[in-house]
Length: 211
Length: 120
Image: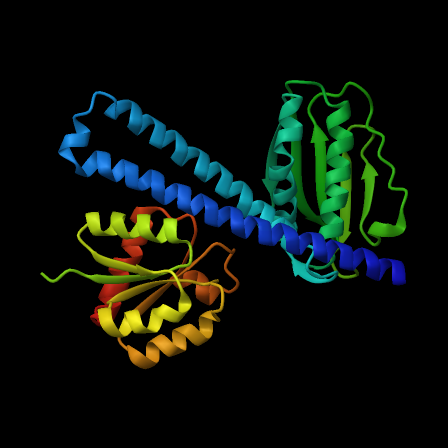
């Protein structure tokens, strides 16, 4: 019990640092955004600057900065939400949002193997009461296992759906180099459990009522 | 037509000053203060139509600041701006998350003006 409290405190600490960091990051991005925006405005509003030979190139650079701000801001949004998942050991949460955060943040890991993922989130899934951070850890472990056996240049499909009294996250790679072997060895995630589907994918099963 | 007066209350000086210039280029009459302690005096002196208030500033509780602003300028419209994900649906409706698209901000300001004029 004391160990669990310790882990929980540690997670809350990491979560707090992440949310503080993303807040700062958003502020920095806002400064870059307004500064680049002001440069763009000067090009647009000043006839003198508009006539500069490099005006076109400057506009392209500003557009590129703008695109990167949007990209970084989107990542910060997901990272902030991910950090807040660790605020409390018990929360009411939406499975789709939880899964989406992990997938977006894992994009670099997946892209390194030239794998893409395709998600199909069921609408109207009932909210789950439990530990969203634990669920995200299990999704991460499942994804990490699958990425190692998934063939390059293929897709991983992620689907959420309801079945009986459970919400299921089904993760199935398109092409495999080896059978999937993912055994959940710990009680840490109970009552959530993960099972392999005939060596070709993983189901994460979340009881809706007893979680 | 009189210019819409805006007051930006934000401790990020580079952000607030660039935004002030951008809004002034678009025919607003914008000014900025960078410290919470200067905000009320600026409201009383400038009589802004709309305030862009950073939700999280050093030495300032946003709720208290809104109350204090409304006490000296009950007719002013306040748009909350935050670097944080917004906590409640109510705040989400009236607030913006940094970084902000200038078009989105101007739409929000125009809506606030209409609301102030009783058109919304």
